[in-house]
Image (cartoon, rainbow, N blue to C red; front, side, top):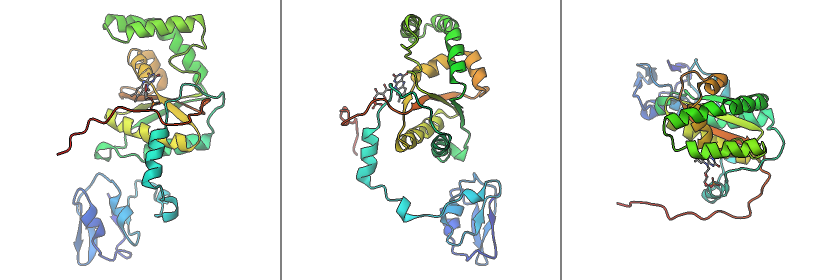
Length: 263
Ligand SMILES: Cc1cc2nc3c(=O)[nH]c(=O)nc-3n(C[C@H](O)[C@H](O)[C@H](O)COP(=O)(O)O)c2cc1C
Protein backbone atom coordinates (compact mmCIF):
# COMPACT_ATOMS: atom_id res chain seq x y z
CA UNK A 1 0.00 0.00 0.00
CA UNK A 2 0.99 3.62 -0.57
CA UNK A 3 1.61 5.52 2.67
CA UNK A 4 0.88 9.20 3.12
CA UNK A 5 2.73 10.99 5.91
CA UNK A 6 -0.15 12.87 7.52
CA UNK A 7 2.21 15.37 9.17
CA UNK A 8 3.76 16.34 5.84
CA UNK A 9 0.60 16.21 3.70
CA UNK A 10 -0.76 19.67 2.86
CA UNK A 11 -3.98 18.31 1.33
CA UNK A 12 -3.30 19.88 -2.07
CA UNK A 13 -4.96 16.93 -3.85
CA UNK A 14 -2.25 16.55 -6.52
CA UNK A 15 -1.85 12.84 -5.72
CA UNK A 16 -5.60 12.15 -5.74
CA UNK A 17 -5.99 13.95 -9.07
CA UNK A 18 -3.12 12.07 -10.76
CA UNK A 19 -3.78 8.60 -9.30
CA UNK A 20 -4.81 6.33 -12.22
CA UNK A 21 -6.64 3.92 -9.92
CA UNK A 22 -8.50 6.61 -7.93
CA UNK A 23 -7.02 5.03 -4.83
CA UNK A 24 -6.47 8.33 -3.01
CA UNK A 25 -9.08 10.78 -1.74
CA UNK A 26 -8.80 14.02 0.23
CA UNK A 27 -10.56 13.83 3.57
CA UNK A 28 -10.39 16.63 6.09
CA UNK A 29 -7.67 18.34 4.07
CA UNK A 30 -5.41 15.25 4.08
CA UNK A 31 -4.76 12.61 1.46
CA UNK A 32 -6.03 9.16 2.35
CA UNK A 33 -5.34 5.91 0.55
CA UNK A 34 -8.60 4.01 0.24
CA UNK A 35 -7.57 0.90 -1.67
CA UNK A 36 -4.56 -1.10 -2.87
CA UNK A 37 -3.18 0.06 -6.20
CA UNK A 38 -0.68 -0.86 -8.93
CA UNK A 39 2.00 1.18 -7.16
CA UNK A 40 2.85 3.26 -10.20
CA UNK A 41 4.36 5.89 -7.92
CA UNK A 42 2.64 8.91 -9.49
CA UNK A 43 1.66 10.05 -6.00
CA UNK A 44 5.32 9.91 -4.96
CA UNK A 45 6.42 11.74 -8.09
CA UNK A 46 3.78 14.48 -7.97
CA UNK A 47 3.67 15.34 -4.26
CA UNK A 48 5.09 18.82 -3.61
CA UNK A 49 6.17 17.94 -0.05
CA UNK A 50 7.35 14.32 -0.45
CA UNK A 51 4.54 13.02 1.76
CA UNK A 52 3.79 9.88 -0.28
CA UNK A 53 5.87 6.75 -0.14
CA UNK A 54 5.69 3.09 -1.11
CA UNK A 55 7.40 1.15 1.66
CA UNK A 56 7.89 -1.90 -0.59
CA UNK A 57 10.28 0.10 -2.76
CA UNK A 58 13.64 1.62 -1.93
CA UNK A 59 12.59 5.23 -1.41
CA UNK A 60 16.25 6.28 -1.26
CA UNK A 61 16.32 5.77 -5.03
CA UNK A 62 13.75 8.46 -5.68
CA UNK A 63 15.38 11.42 -7.42
CA UNK A 64 14.23 15.03 -7.36
CA UNK A 65 13.47 16.73 -10.68
CA UNK A 66 16.51 18.63 -11.89
CA UNK A 67 16.06 20.88 -14.93
CA UNK A 68 19.82 20.72 -15.62
CA UNK A 69 19.73 16.97 -16.26
CA UNK A 70 16.42 17.16 -18.13
CA UNK A 71 17.40 19.27 -21.07
CA UNK A 72 17.26 16.86 -24.02
CA UNK A 73 15.92 19.05 -26.82
CA UNK A 74 13.41 17.63 -29.34
CA UNK A 75 16.09 17.97 -32.03
CA UNK A 76 18.71 16.15 -29.94
CA UNK A 77 16.30 13.37 -29.12
CA UNK A 78 15.33 12.81 -32.76
CA UNK A 79 18.99 13.00 -33.72
CA UNK A 80 19.75 10.21 -31.22
CA UNK A 81 16.89 8.07 -32.56
CA UNK A 82 18.07 8.53 -36.14
CA UNK A 83 21.75 7.91 -35.46
CA UNK A 84 21.48 4.71 -33.47
CA UNK A 85 22.52 1.71 -35.59
CA UNK A 86 22.42 -2.04 -35.20
CA UNK A 87 25.97 -3.02 -34.32
CA UNK A 88 27.43 -6.14 -35.91
CA UNK A 89 31.12 -5.30 -35.45
CA UNK A 90 32.36 -5.03 -31.90
CA UNK A 91 35.59 -4.09 -30.20
CA UNK A 92 37.14 -6.84 -28.12
CA UNK A 93 36.40 -5.00 -24.89
CA UNK A 94 33.89 -5.89 -22.16
CA UNK A 95 31.35 -3.42 -20.82
CA UNK A 96 32.18 -1.94 -17.45
CA UNK A 97 29.90 -3.06 -14.60
CA UNK A 98 28.72 0.48 -13.80
CA UNK A 99 27.68 1.01 -17.43
CA UNK A 100 25.86 -2.32 -17.49
CA UNK A 101 24.04 -1.31 -14.33
CA UNK A 102 22.90 2.00 -15.83
CA UNK A 103 21.76 0.17 -18.98
CA UNK A 104 19.77 -2.23 -16.80
CA UNK A 105 18.33 0.70 -14.87
CA UNK A 106 17.03 2.12 -18.16
CA UNK A 107 15.21 -1.20 -18.62
CA UNK A 108 13.96 -1.30 -15.04
CA UNK A 109 12.50 2.21 -15.23
CA UNK A 110 10.63 1.54 -18.48
CA UNK A 111 6.83 1.48 -18.44
CA UNK A 112 5.21 -1.94 -18.06
CA UNK A 113 1.58 -2.92 -18.56
CA UNK A 114 -0.30 -2.65 -15.25
CA UNK A 115 3.05 -1.58 -13.73
CA UNK A 116 3.91 -5.29 -13.56
CA UNK A 117 7.69 -4.63 -13.58
CA UNK A 118 8.04 -8.30 -14.33
CA UNK A 119 10.87 -8.39 -16.85
CA UNK A 120 13.84 -10.58 -16.03
CA UNK A 121 17.15 -9.39 -17.46
CA UNK A 122 19.84 -12.00 -18.02
CA UNK A 123 23.29 -10.53 -18.62
CA UNK A 124 25.84 -12.98 -19.98
CA UNK A 125 29.27 -11.42 -20.11
CA UNK A 126 31.60 -13.29 -17.75
CA UNK A 127 30.33 -16.68 -18.88
CA UNK A 128 29.66 -15.81 -22.51
CA UNK A 129 32.22 -18.31 -23.87
CA UNK A 130 30.58 -21.10 -21.87
CA UNK A 131 27.14 -20.08 -23.18
CA UNK A 132 28.37 -19.89 -26.78
CA UNK A 133 29.99 -23.33 -26.48
CA UNK A 134 26.67 -24.76 -25.28
CA UNK A 135 24.83 -22.86 -28.02
CA UNK A 136 26.89 -24.44 -30.81
CA UNK A 137 26.79 -27.85 -29.15
CA UNK A 138 23.00 -27.56 -29.10
CA UNK A 139 22.77 -26.29 -32.64
CA UNK A 140 22.19 -29.63 -34.42
CA UNK A 141 19.25 -30.31 -32.13
CA UNK A 142 17.94 -26.75 -32.72
CA UNK A 143 18.07 -27.49 -36.45
CA UNK A 144 16.17 -30.76 -35.93
CA UNK A 145 13.43 -28.92 -34.00
CA UNK A 146 13.15 -26.19 -36.64
CA UNK A 147 12.96 -28.77 -39.41
CA UNK A 148 10.26 -30.69 -37.59
CA UNK A 149 8.24 -27.49 -37.14
CA UNK A 150 8.77 -26.51 -40.76
CA UNK A 151 10.17 -23.21 -39.45
CA UNK A 152 11.31 -20.53 -41.92
CA UNK A 153 14.43 -20.24 -39.73
CA UNK A 154 15.57 -23.74 -40.73
CA UNK A 155 17.29 -22.91 -44.05
CA UNK A 156 19.08 -19.73 -42.94
CA UNK A 157 20.12 -21.36 -39.65
CA UNK A 158 21.56 -24.40 -41.47
CA UNK A 159 23.54 -22.02 -43.69
CA UNK A 160 24.78 -20.02 -40.66
CA UNK A 161 25.83 -23.25 -38.97
CA UNK A 162 27.88 -24.29 -42.00
CA UNK A 163 29.51 -20.87 -42.07
CA UNK A 164 30.38 -21.14 -38.39
CA UNK A 165 31.73 -24.69 -38.89
CA UNK A 166 34.06 -23.39 -41.60
CA UNK A 167 35.32 -20.61 -39.35
CA UNK A 168 33.93 -19.74 -35.89
CA UNK A 169 34.71 -16.08 -36.60
CA UNK A 170 31.75 -16.21 -39.04
CA UNK A 171 29.24 -16.04 -36.27
CA UNK A 172 25.90 -14.67 -37.48
CA UNK A 173 24.40 -15.18 -34.03
CA UNK A 174 26.84 -13.56 -31.63
CA UNK A 175 28.89 -11.39 -34.02
CA UNK A 176 31.79 -11.62 -31.56
CA UNK A 177 30.03 -9.22 -29.21
CA UNK A 178 31.38 -9.23 -25.65
CA UNK A 179 27.98 -9.35 -23.98
CA UNK A 180 24.65 -11.11 -24.57
CA UNK A 181 21.49 -9.88 -22.91
CA UNK A 182 18.16 -11.67 -22.78
CA UNK A 183 14.91 -10.15 -21.55
CA UNK A 184 12.18 -12.54 -20.45
CA UNK A 185 8.69 -11.15 -19.91
CA UNK A 186 5.16 -12.50 -19.93
CA UNK A 187 4.14 -9.44 -21.94
CA UNK A 188 6.58 -9.28 -24.88
CA UNK A 189 5.85 -5.59 -25.39
CA UNK A 190 7.13 -4.86 -21.88
CA UNK A 191 10.39 -6.58 -22.84
CA UNK A 192 10.61 -4.78 -26.18
CA UNK A 193 10.06 -1.36 -24.67
CA UNK A 194 12.68 -2.03 -22.00
CA UNK A 195 15.08 -3.15 -24.71
CA UNK A 196 14.63 0.10 -26.65
CA UNK A 197 15.42 2.23 -23.61
CA UNK A 198 18.38 0.01 -22.83
CA UNK A 199 19.68 0.51 -26.34
CA UNK A 200 19.39 4.28 -25.96
CA UNK A 201 21.27 4.11 -22.67
CA UNK A 202 23.91 1.85 -24.25
CA UNK A 203 24.43 4.42 -27.01
CA UNK A 204 24.71 7.20 -24.43
CA UNK A 205 27.42 5.09 -22.74
CA UNK A 206 29.38 4.93 -26.01
CA UNK A 207 28.26 1.35 -26.71
CA UNK A 208 25.66 -0.12 -29.05
CA UNK A 209 23.41 -3.14 -29.48
CA UNK A 210 21.98 -5.56 -31.97
CA UNK A 211 18.50 -6.92 -31.38
CA UNK A 212 18.61 -10.52 -32.46
CA UNK A 213 15.50 -12.25 -33.69
CA UNK A 214 17.75 -15.15 -34.68
CA UNK A 215 18.85 -15.65 -31.10
CA UNK A 216 15.21 -15.52 -29.95
CA UNK A 217 14.40 -18.17 -32.58
CA UNK A 218 17.26 -20.37 -31.40
CA UNK A 219 16.29 -20.05 -27.73
CA UNK A 220 12.67 -20.89 -28.47
CA UNK A 221 13.88 -24.10 -30.11
CA UNK A 222 16.17 -25.06 -27.24
CA UNK A 223 14.89 -25.82 -23.72
CA UNK A 224 18.49 -26.55 -22.71
CA UNK A 225 19.69 -23.02 -23.55
CA UNK A 226 16.68 -21.50 -21.79
CA UNK A 227 17.42 -23.65 -18.76
CA UNK A 228 21.03 -22.44 -18.73
CA UNK A 229 19.80 -18.85 -18.82
CA UNK A 230 17.58 -19.60 -15.83
CA UNK A 231 14.35 -17.77 -16.67
CA UNK A 232 12.08 -20.80 -16.26
CA UNK A 233 8.83 -20.65 -18.22
CA UNK A 234 8.92 -16.89 -18.69
CA UNK A 235 8.64 -15.93 -22.36
CA UNK A 236 11.75 -14.90 -24.26
CA UNK A 237 10.85 -11.32 -25.20
CA UNK A 238 14.12 -10.02 -26.59
CA UNK A 239 17.73 -10.98 -27.20
CA UNK A 240 20.39 -8.33 -27.60
CA UNK A 241 24.11 -8.22 -28.19
CA UNK A 242 25.93 -5.43 -26.53
CA UNK A 243 29.38 -3.91 -26.82
CA UNK A 244 31.54 -1.09 -28.11
CA UNK A 245 31.12 -0.56 -31.86
CA UNK A 246 34.15 -1.23 -34.04
CA UNK A 247 32.49 0.84 -36.76
CA UNK A 248 31.59 4.52 -36.86
CA UNK A 249 28.68 5.87 -38.85
CA UNK A 250 29.03 9.22 -40.56
CA UNK A 251 25.39 9.85 -41.36
CA UNK A 252 21.87 8.48 -40.92
CA UNK A 253 20.56 5.57 -42.97
CA UNK A 254 17.60 6.38 -45.25
CA UNK A 255 14.14 5.10 -44.42
CA UNK A 256 10.84 4.46 -46.18
CA UNK A 257 8.18 7.12 -45.77
CA UNK A 258 6.10 6.34 -42.71
CA UNK A 259 2.74 4.68 -43.23
CA UNK A 260 0.62 7.21 -41.36
CA UNK A 261 -3.13 7.65 -41.37
CA UNK A 262 -4.13 11.19 -40.38
CA UNK A 263 -7.77 11.68 -39.48
C1 LIG B 1 13.13 -7.34 -33.29
C2 LIG B 1 14.37 -7.24 -34.14
C3 LIG B 1 15.07 -8.39 -34.45
C4 LIG B 1 16.25 -8.32 -35.22
N1 LIG B 1 16.95 -9.45 -35.45
C5 LIG B 1 18.12 -9.37 -36.11
C6 LIG B 1 18.95 -10.55 -36.28
O1 LIG B 1 18.60 -11.64 -35.84
N2 LIG B 1 20.11 -10.44 -36.95
C7 LIG B 1 20.54 -9.23 -37.45
O2 LIG B 1 21.61 -9.17 -38.05
N3 LIG B 1 19.79 -8.09 -37.29
C8 LIG B 1 18.62 -8.14 -36.62
N4 LIG B 1 17.87 -6.99 -36.42
C9 LIG B 1 18.37 -5.70 -36.90
C10 LIG B 1 17.61 -5.18 -38.12
O3 LIG B 1 18.02 -5.88 -39.26
C11 LIG B 1 17.94 -3.67 -38.23
O4 LIG B 1 17.31 -3.01 -37.16
C12 LIG B 1 17.50 -3.04 -39.54
O5 LIG B 1 18.20 -3.60 -40.60
C13 LIG B 1 17.72 -1.53 -39.55
O6 LIG B 1 19.08 -1.20 -39.28
P1 LIG B 1 19.43 -0.28 -38.04
O7 LIG B 1 18.98 -0.99 -36.80
O8 LIG B 1 20.91 -0.08 -38.07
O9 LIG B 1 18.67 1.02 -38.18
C14 LIG B 1 16.71 -7.05 -35.69
C15 LIG B 1 15.98 -5.90 -35.35
C16 LIG B 1 14.84 -5.98 -34.58
C17 LIG B 1 14.10 -4.72 -34.23
